[in-house]
Image 1 (cartoon, helix red, strand yellow):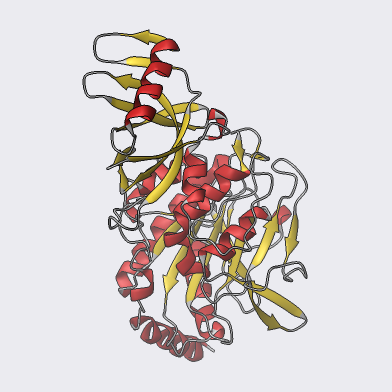
Image 2 (image 1 turned 45 degrees about the horizontal axis):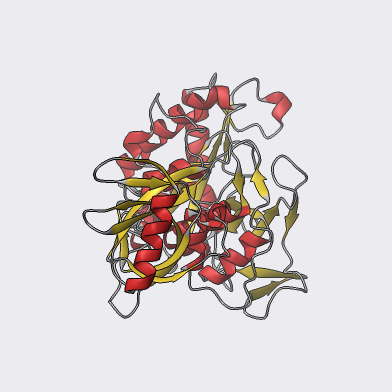
Length: 422
């Protein structure tokens, strides 16, 4: 999985160059170079300058066009408003600057408004030819002005980190076809109109989508499948791959109850030598993932022994803060420790899935040291998570290397103590 920092355009070999459409922003007469940029959420992002690739005639035509349409200039730079569009090839993008850019062609039929970072991401994604992007301009998160093109760009960039958590799992989707806010619905069955490359797995009377590749992820994104929920086990197995506890406070305003519960759980995990991973749910609480591996002999019943012990212990220690009461009306403002949800047939929001709320929040993996009084849910939205992964490695990068084999002994001990009490 993606273990390093987010790099949408890593360096390629010379023969395997990226391509994109950019608008001209100016001319450096001394260097005889042409500056280019793209739009990102309405702002101009300057992406460096090119010199190579233009023949003498085209170079002079471009120079004269810029000089005749300049909006301001000084000795070293002549600026123009975004209008002239060109296709460039390049080797990589480093710090939002094109590496080794070269002119390909003028794109006079392309409006400058269509030269966007999101389009650059999408046009360079290796997608199946049957992935057809429709209405990329459609607003999905109206408050944040994130359109479908922006959502697809998010999925493409996040895919190295997200796909490992989707792989070989039967998806349950929440789709928001009218955007957010707007009506939403659950979808389990793969629709009849899905292209043939979409993998499915039949379970009972349902044919679930299995998302093992970027093309499937982008097809789902084009369908405005916003929330991707996964079961705890892989397809064709009946044993969990992980154990997950859901810490559900009454509201976002009481989010610190989830922080307190998570910290108390971490103390218990550490005492047992258990490796665990916190994740902000993107809703109003936290979720704790404990990997046990695909070869673990532990069943859901075994896992329930451990999760019920944790939940009951915390409720005994902090009866005014935590509860295992399932009925909301009886919780009395306390945080609900949901250990019942970890079961066959149940699902959890996938790491890095967006959420169908107006804040465009994301179910984001955290480092344990981030679980503190400064942590807030609303910080972790789509733009922030992309920016974060460009500077901070994914906290769950080694998740599938951990198996917590010692958990088997812990559960055996808990079973033994339970039988003695009985």
